Length: 189
Image (cartoon, rainbow, N blue to C red):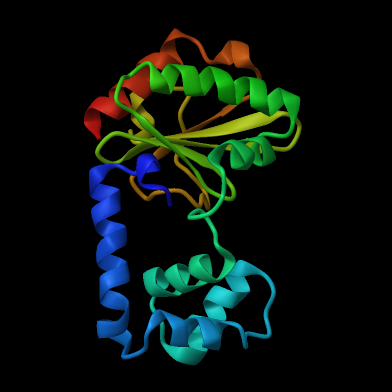
């Protein structure tokens, strides 16, 4: 990931994972890349499982190898990633409203993953992913009891810190309450 898109804490964590790969596994990144190129699987989740099951790599190191192999995040333009993720005009409009409310918290870093965008200050406090039909699922670093609009997440791929989510179906739903929830999540993070 580009350093500009990481909080200080995230940058330190990624550097630690990278520094520990050879020490923890006994193989260099180049050796792991050679092994990963022999993987018969094509999907990232299947490749991850293959590295874990067949070579004993743990989650973080396996993802590091796969990301390095594919050039994921480190060489992608965040603008292109956003355009690809938010290609539906409906969900893009909702995303832009959520992004404005999240960025209004000041000193916020936005990152883009394959399936979601996230906002962090010291740690991730919110994330959003597109949902079919021009909708958006917003995850927040709050508990579901913070608002009647919130529910507990089900099978989300973003940070385990995000304990609540809300389905937004239009940009108009990004109202004062959503802005207040984003602010509370940011302050809590």
